[in-house]
Length: 98
Ligand SMILES: [Zn+2]
Image (cartoon, rainbow, N blue to C red):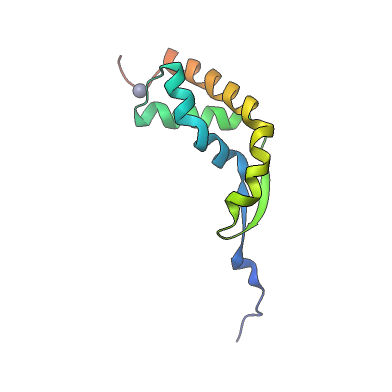
């Protein structure tokens, strides 16, 4: 039996926020002098993403960047603030001894 050829595989649905937070996470953490071990980075990422609204975008594979870069400026301030807040939370209670 042959599958109908619906080309959904060429389309992706992505939470734009995941990309956007990932993009500016390190520069923001640098400016905050936060711990940048993998544990803290992942905790900060999770907390920041939980505090931000999801922004799902449909993209063709490979075209993600050009399409969503237009959204970037719009959310940069919110994302920076969310990362800063998350880093404070994590630095108060890191998964490791200081
Ligand atoms: Zn750490």
